[in-house]
Image (cartoon, rainbow, N blue to C red; front, side):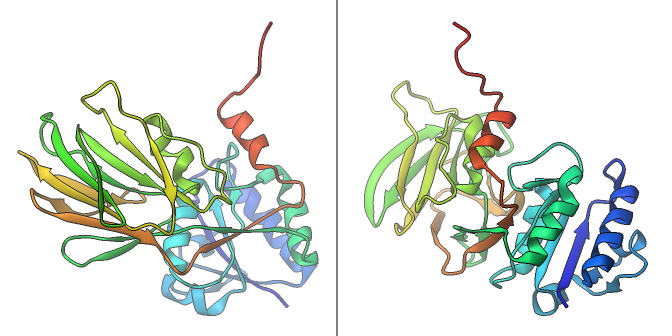
Length: 282
């Protein structure tokens, strides 16, 4: 019997109907469902467990909602090897590879062991205070209390790379390359790439270009000059404020995140739909 965890965003449209379908299919497959207290309101037959129990209790975790729900679940599982199969309650996301219409087919594939398994790079971000955060998407430095630009020094493996006059800087994983980094002109990295992307927010230069470096590198960002307190955020969650002289170090975590996708899943198909790639009209 598979032990399946469910963490959901119950505010999504038609969530109740999708949960009813989930329960019926789980019963058909002989699965035992576990859910947090809020999600269990829509799954009365599920066993209620605390967030800190999922990593030691379930075989697979099903985030049901959007990409934000997947990020929350990834943080929840931390360094465990529990795979994630994201079910989107709405339009298809970058991380939630299963639409609500194809949920039952994806559950059949999971039960049959035919899902595609992807190992995703996770970054480890060390703040000046010593606080360590894991980033499935990105680490962002910027967004202080005024509009004045700051100076950030970038070093790769101890070697000075460059200095940026800018509003901020983003270090992303391949998974996060289609997030905030993309809006700054950063590169799209296929999830299997062993790389980090580095992009700058509003650089005060015309020659700036994003960087792609091996994820075996150690990235150091030093706040060289700032007239305001900057904010370090990881996967959209505020970590701490930064001031002049502070250094943020980013490396690859030894423990990646594991995702499952249906057998017919195509990353580039998702890109085409989400980014509205249409090709030439000529």
